[in-house]
Image (cartoon, rainbow, N blue to C red; front, side, top):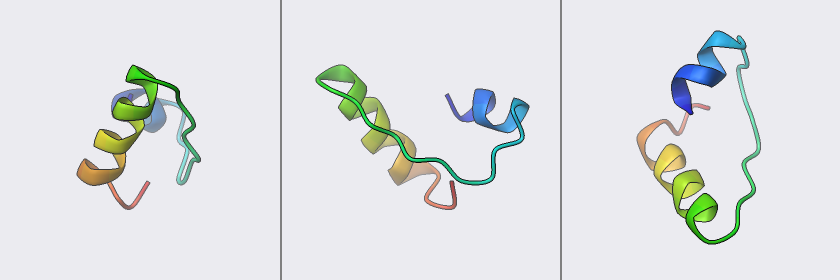
Length: 35
């Protein structure tokens, strides 16, 4: 997901997810808080 955000040249995003999508969002936030 992080690579996709960089390819799309997005500086900042809001992530919303349910179940495994929520976990993916939390992991993204922990690993890349600048996004």
